[in-house]
Length: 336
Image (cartoon, rainbow, N blue to C red):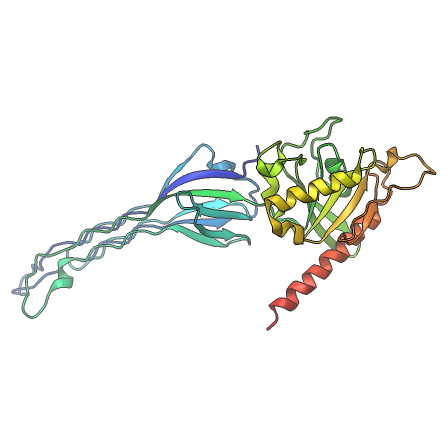
């Protein structure tokens, strides 16, 4: 099952208390205080595991707790620190404080870590309080409590191209034809219930990742249909391919509606490069003129058929050129 949003409770370890002790050795009169400090409590941290694709591991286990620090001991022995707790998450996970919606951080690359709850500091033993005027202190400190919070984890898939369209626009069929992904395909709407990823391989060792997003309907940004749950997954794509089936009643109106839903959800989505893909061209009568879709802001308009393969090569090469241009612009922006 694809899980892209979970809420968990995390608690870092409590610090150990400092010790009250005095040195007692033969031949060492008035040995003085020797109470050691308490150990630090363990942290709770998230770490990216590239082998994971969902947050389903957290679905049935909500409470997570790190180890507590051990108390200090005599002879100035510091208590052992508590064991850190590492929670593995897939790339593209963001962590938010569920109470305040504060962004705690996002994890994108393999091995990246994020501390979501810090362990408590260990208390000082009485040896720390010795002075010239107080040579036998009986003062010591308890360990501090570790941080405790409710964290909301959300997953945003990392893809280069996002396929956007109404239900039954042919997105899953197209993904299965251009990659090795095998999404569910049927002759009725809403067969795609979860996002699907596929790797497109081109000659000369070129490749990019395509995401198939469940179909959008009017009002998706307000929670209607299924697509609203997955609009977040196209926020990190570099470009969009908007599919318009050739057998649709009004492609221009459909395009305008999809663009409106994207803008209502996040204006940043309308700033991404996008192309029009007229799909299901195998249903178009041969010899008839291709439908013209007015899209001045699109980088191109492609006519494809996932059944016959017509137009797929031009579409993929066009996507590759657009991605290469986007990467070049990003690299130039990062260069000082």
